[in-house]
Length: 61
Image 1: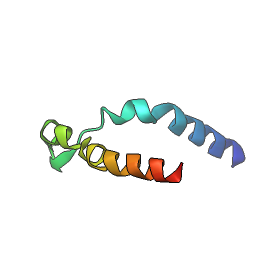
Image 2: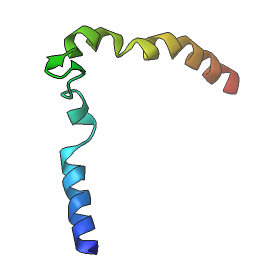
Image 3: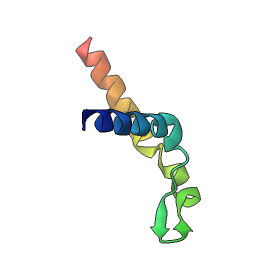
């Protein structure tokens, strides 16, 4: 049972990760990929919060 868990964890570790996150489609409904439409909005939270992060970094020293 332990060997099966190790094999499963290794298989999941090889198949996932940051590099494969770009290729995951965003399904609007089954068969319709909304990824190209939503792609420009993915970086929006980072861009909006960048000034707040900079201010907190300056205040923290």
